[in-house]
Length: 312
Image (cartoon, rainbow, N blue to C red; front, side, top):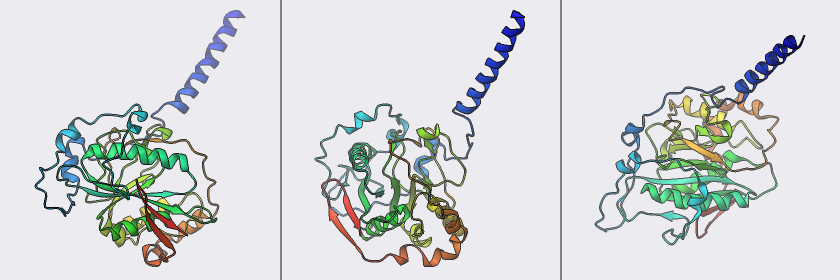
């Protein structure tokens, strides 16, 4: 009897262990996706910086920076920065001649602590990449449900007025964890945040392009930006993917190691109940819903560490 009970208990314990392994193993539901190899990154990134000064500067170095890329384990180390080299509006230019010029577009509302952490972190992280960049914060300043895509459209529109040809569409709660995840554009749009800690560094599904996406300004205009119809959480990224595919733009990725991000803690939004209905006819609206339907009810203010686009 005792032997039978012991075997029974062992059997049940094994079942529990297998269940725990299946549910919590980091490779559960992992998507094995194709990506640009680490040693081929520089050949895929577009050189787009336009020199405006007559300074005789040496070219910035990138090969060694990528070869010595490292994973950031303590993000607090990157919060220590004096910001003296950041110009009004959140613009940075290295003391060498950069190849890459990038606008970081962040959608935002009512997340003051996250915004503060994001700004401080990125102004320490990005200068190490020897790129010219400017951070644009597009804030929704009304009482309607949050419209992430609409804010990214406004931020991108203003960035293009500043003549940026490379846009990084960015969530405020994501921080890059690898120094080699260079903030620049490739020939095809690049899904940059395909390895996030809260998702156990797995890619949830192949078509996902949410979180952080790099796209050329001309490509963003070609697809007419993102749809402005998604109020509340969800749907707008799948809509964006469909828009890109419709215009023969196929997102690429770098390796999971390079593409690591951490997500800052926040209360998750309630999913929009009509997101699937709006998504169903997304391509029918592509030419009449996006960048070309933005109104002029906004203002732009230069803050010490970012360009503030306030959408009323």
